[in-house]
Amino acid sequence: MTVSKWLIPSRSRFLTLVVVAAIAVGGACNCNDDDPDPDPDVGVEPDIPPIEDVIDDVEDDVVDDVVDDVVDDVIDDVEDDVVDDVEEDVVDDVDPDPIDIPEGMARVQVVHNAADPDLASIDIYFDEDLLIDDFEFRTATPYVDIDADDYEIAVAGADSDSVDDALITFDPTEFEEGERYLVVANGVVDPDDFEDNPDGESIDVALYVFEDAKETADDPDIDEMVLFHGATDAPGVDLVANNDILIVADLLYGNFTDGYLSLPRGITVLDLLVSATEERVNSYQTPSMTGGDTFVALASGFLDSEQNEDASFEIVVYPTPVDGDRLEAIVLDEAARMQLVHDSIDPATSPADVFVDEILFEEGLEYRSATPFLTYPSGEEIDFAITETGAEDTDDAVAEATLEFDPGSTHIAIASGVLDPEEFPANPDDVDTDFALYTYDDAREAGVDDEDVDILTFHSVIDAGDVDVTVSDSPDVTIAEELGYGEFANYTAVPVDEEALISIVPPEPPPTPLAEYDVDLLPFAGEAALLVLSGAFDTDDDRPPVAAVLISPDGEVLVIDDDDLE
Image 1: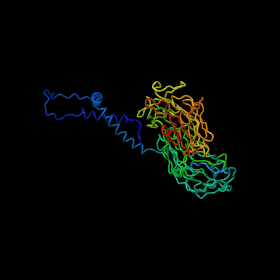
Image 2: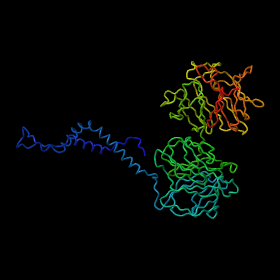
Image 3: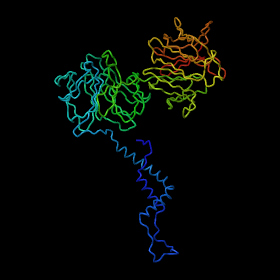
Image 4: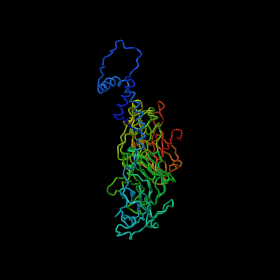
């Protein structure tokens, strides 16, 4: 545990240390002085003041004289000792569950996550007692006290009169005294009516019990979450936090994570992947966490929503309240996705560092390079800043932008332009070529047809006016018309060909190509690709010539330049 602020010792301990130090420095008595007093008061009763006055004098005189010299050293020592002592005491004294469990009792939270429409509303019996009445799909109870015992738990329809109406009765489940349990009702009544689990796991309705459940987090600055895979037709999944931290691996249907996952304050973005293929299912984000709480998160519903239109696949979470009514599931918002591309011809911008909300996010991004699509929070403003590489902060950023993404949206952002346009060729249409971030807000990470490549085109040639762009086929496909600097042309499906010809053509006659590039499009079959018209026609001062730059969703870059021209 880290103590994030100084801990000040109590007043009594501080005064004790000061008084001890004062005595050590100036309060000792020399009672055996070898040098005789030159003018002793022999035979005279010594004038000894009351002890209270002596103490007052000591406190007034000695402490005043000593504190200035001693107190700094004392405080340093005290801070070191007290912080060490308190860190140990705090760790020892942390009670992760301050809610007392009465003697002879256990505490239980129950979650209804069974997506079978026949189980949309149920009654739950513990032995013959109705514990939960009219229990709706995607709701949960708070933690409740029950007698520690073994129970036959039964599930009946919501209109049941007694346990005799049960649809299913499970083998006895033990709830030990003083323990906390999380119980999830999941599965389907008749598996033959539903799709099989791809990993062969049984999808019969069942009760899944997580022991060692928590009602509060161990650390007030951290939230904790346990996950359960409850989507019957979904394969084993991985979960990646903040784009690069694998927090769950190969979680199969019907299983909890081994324990609670720690989540920092604020929003955490999550990518859900199929374990076997690493294919991304979707991206989500947590609510803004505040610390000290616990949650249960569940993969819920059907990937194939035709099995129950009211139970399409979602990631849902439930907080852990101290008490109160039943909880409705919080459906996690989808996060946003964005690919960042560097295509600024200005050498002063390469390599560049990218900061997100003042935190270094991408270091050393080179000219004509790109990130893969990454996951970002949606529904809130995000501050992007681009700096020269090695910058410690964003004070001298060369470009800044504040973006806000819709849930589930996908974007492309391209850094283009120059820091000082006067040092570069002017744009013939007088378009501003200052360094800036250009965004496209309807991007794709996959193509529509396996036989095509869907091409999104961006004009990044600072000294070129409007252009048309075609790709040879039978007939030629025009993928951009009158495209100006800093503009995007929407996706166009192009049949893949290993000998395609990309042509940049002026929109006005004569249609003599300004540049042409041979390219093999077969590797891009079924993909969505970004085509950046890059470089400059005026190649003085070692400026890179115009090139066609193809970028795949995973950030792979193919530069087709003069060496590839016919």
